[in-house]
Image (cartoon, rainbow, N blue to C red):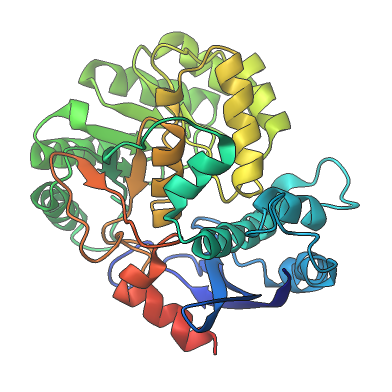
Length: 388
C-alpha cells in the first residue's frame, strides 16, 4: 500500500459570499492524494485543503512534505492489519527530521495533507470519517446522531454594513442556526456596539451571539471592549489579543465575567500548554477554538485535546475553528462541544453537504465513505476542476 501521487493547487477564498468584495487576498491549498488501492474500479483519492484564515502552503507541501510521503516504502504507511492507510504513520513520515518550534506555517502544510490522508484512509475502509476515527482511536459506542453547530461570519461590509449584517444573521437564523458569530475590533468600539445590537436583534438574544476580535486588541483597548461587552451577556468573546500575549489575555480574563474563546491562532501542543498555564482561562465557562488542520492535522490536535482534558478541561469546551466537513467529523468522533459552519463565507467550502439541514442548531453527519466532499457540488467541482 503506497501513496503514488500528491498534488497541490492554490486557490483564492473570500470572507464574503460575494467574492468581489475585497477580502485580503486569502488563499488556501487544495490537496489530492492518490493511492495504489482500488475501490469500485477506481484508485482511491483522498482530498483535503488548508482550512481558512491562513494562506496556501504550496511551497512547503511540494518541496518538503509530499516528497516524504511519496518516498515511503511499500507498506510503511499501512495500518497493522495491512487493510488501510494509517494516518499516524503518515504523520510521522511527514514530520521526520523536523525540529521543534517553527509552528507558524509548516503546521498548516502538514494539516492540509493530513486531512487528505484521513479522507483516503476512511475511503479505503469504506467508512464515514467520524466512524473511522472512533474505530482507530478505540472509542466505544455509537457516534452522536447530530452535533451542535453555529454560523460563522459577520465580517465588516464596506458598504451598507448594518443592513447587510442584519440580513446575514437573519438568513442564518432562517437556515436553522440558533447561534452566530460576528467580527469586531477593526471599526471602533462605538460602531462595533451598533453592529452587535443589530446582530442580536436578528438572532433574537445576545446569548445567541459570539463576537470575534481576530486578535486585534491590546491591553487598553481590550479592557475597554471587555467592559462594554460584559453587561450584554454574549455567548462568547473570541480571540481578544495577540495569541502569544498571555499577559493581556490573563488581564482580560480576570475582569470579563462571560465566556472567552481562544486558540484559533495557536498551532501546537507547546503553545496550548502556555495558554493553559498563563492565560488564566476558566475551565467552567471558556471555549477552545483550536483548528485541527492548522494544528498539524488531527494527530497534533489530539495531543492538544488530550493534554487539556487531562488538565481538567471538559470535551465540551472544544469548538474547533474551520467551518467545514472535516471539523464536523472530528467533533462527532471525539464528542466535542460543537462545530463552526460558514454558511456563506469562504466559498467553495461554505456550508456542509448539500443535503444537510440545520435543525434547532444541530446537524446530522454524512454517512458516505471519507469526509464527504463529494456531497457538496461546489466543493466537488473545485476538486475535479483542479485535479485530473
